[in-house]
Amino acid sequence: MRDLLCALLLLCIATGTAAAQARTAADSTSIGRYPGFDRFLAWATVWGNLKGQGVYTCEEWKRYAEGLFKNADRNHDGYVDAQEFESIQQADSMLKGADLAYFDDNRDGRLSRSEFLDKPNPFFVRYDRKHTCQVTLDDISDADDPAKKKPGPGRSH
Image 1 (tube, helix red, strand yellow):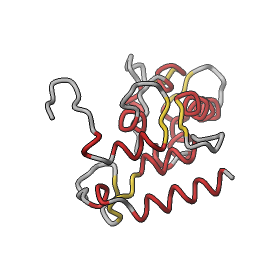
Image 2 (spheres, helix red, strand yellow; image 1 turned 30 degrees about the horizontal axis):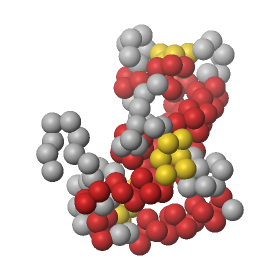
Image 3 (tube, rainbow, N blue to C red; image 1 turned 45 degrees about the vertical axis):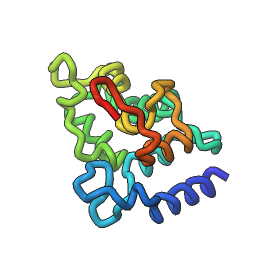
């Protein structure tokens, strides 16, 4: 069932909506050759919607990220150093170009579990407009509908 929902979701993404087709190649979340293709949404199908109900949660993301961290921490010291971080980059294509320094808040050259897990996931930054740590298919659809976008702080309609 999950595979069927993922396939349906990817088909919807590939065909795109009118709003998605209006995006330009400069949109950092889409791939230039594939207007309407949202790499963050495709990525979410890797770690989220585990119950197959069209809901992506922060808990699902953190469970997935925890697995990445645990597998990378080969010496089991509770930290991921630069060499161990390479295994995270290899394990997840969205993190392939990630920089350890982005996660390393205290600049000690290694990541603690909290430094890695507590960084905002760009999928939730984009789609969790209600800040509930839960994104539904309706939230995803609403994010691409200019009429339903709510102005953020300091922005007007």
